Image (cartoon, rainbow, N blue to C red; front, top):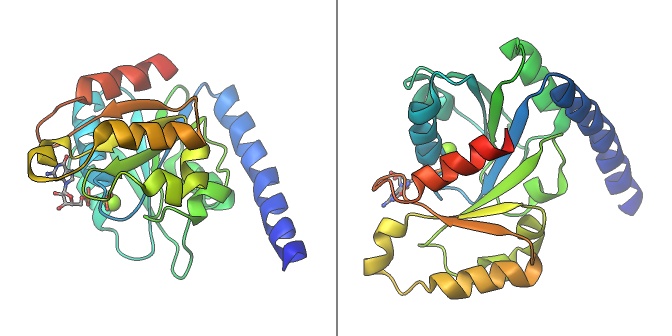
Length: 211
Ligand SMILES: Nc1nc2c(ncn2[C@@H]2O[C@H](COP(=O)(O)OP(=O)(O)O)[C@@H](O)[C@H]2O)c(=O)[nH]1
Ligand SMILES: [Mg+2]
């Protein structure tokens, strides 16, 4: 088991390194959104695309089945490609390499990847991205960074999402941030709501600064 896991991750890491080199040479910023299903990744992304539509943004959508999310992104006018993983629980570096070939990228694009909704497997797979961004919605409970530490340890930024719902919940934002910093003292945090617009400017600023 250990040998097989090492072989799979070793092969993935080699392809991820090729992707990273290629993104660096083409001056592309690649961001990998990771979260559980339903935390609001696609909604946040459609709002992000509306704000950055004319700014060389492309999206790679990962789901086990359906092209629904890529269709939602395309409605904003942004180019998107859907990768279906079938039985797979995460995107891997080879899938991202071939999605980028199909997108026929040029130079300087912001490539946003929406990974398969899952707080476990995507943490272990480097895609060649610059940053993983973990999205945790306030309906999921503030203990999730402690229960799924690998995901928060691997991420540079946590978006605490759906904050418009806070008045209806017993979610302690500060406790959630403290939990995330227990597993990753360096993690940055932005509170967002794609529906009310709260925190969206800060999120867009963060993206632009990384570029
Ligand atoms: N109240 C609220 N609901 C949201 C927000 N973002 C997404 N949703 C809802 O959460 C559900 C899942 O959203 P979706 O973007 O598909 O999540 P994904 O599975 O992470 O891509 C949908 O019903 C959205 O309308 C938000 O900021 N606030
Ligand atoms: Mg989605």
